[in-house]
Length: 322
Figure 1: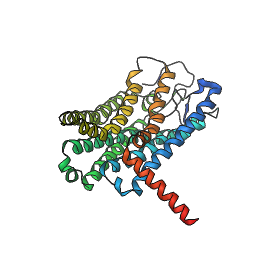
Figure 2 (figure 1 turned 90 degrees about the horizontal axis):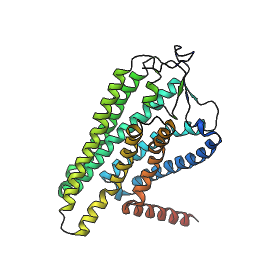
Figure 3 (figure 1 turned 180 degrees about the horizontal axis):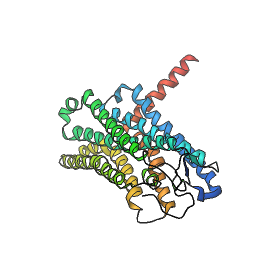
Figure 4 (figure 1 turned 45 degrees about the horizontal axis):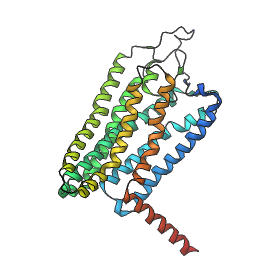
């Protein structure tokens, strides 16, 4: 339900948009945060674009794992771009407003990308499970068609579920002070602005979380239980090390993604400190997408080798022209 705090405009329907309070409490420190987030955003864009470019230019990376990684990198670019540019503007201006249509568009994109990422991470876990537990049948099971179907299903689930959910949320009437105590249009704070019964919306949010967010997490968990069981049965320590190294980057990304998201949505709700909530949200919406390409490039010999080859070819081509 909408907040019932005393406000002369609480019964007035909001038609021109919301005010994202964001990090206003930081005062002049917002400039420092702007500079930090600008660097983080640029590193995120360059890192994820680099992954996409390397996979495209290097036939040795035309495998199921890197096919999913390209999808993940594209998704991270869309996810951060739906929020960070506006956040950067709001850190510099006094009037931190966003029209209702802009708020809806932002929520559509970040929820679709978030849900699709859950499904893609599960598909990547399945790929690692097949590679380690059924290596002789890997190329048969993880054919190009199967990879496209898994990625397509991930995007289809993300788009269809979240379009339905967000459309329903923005069919509600909004009224009150217009002030959202967050730096982007997230579902919980926007639902608080509704001056109608939101209990059914809250049930849908919970259902989506359990089925489409925790569901993929359980599939990832089951995949890694089987992977770990297979690795521990390998006869040599070197074999165990090599097998684990093929899935360590994905495991780190899953831990970062689910760890920060769960802390943001579950870990601090008993604590009414809005500033802590926002800082934790900043971790999974801005920092984690920057770390993913770093993890996959710094910890992956194939990607580092592809990077060296690509840079070497570029230098050679440049020298040839001059």
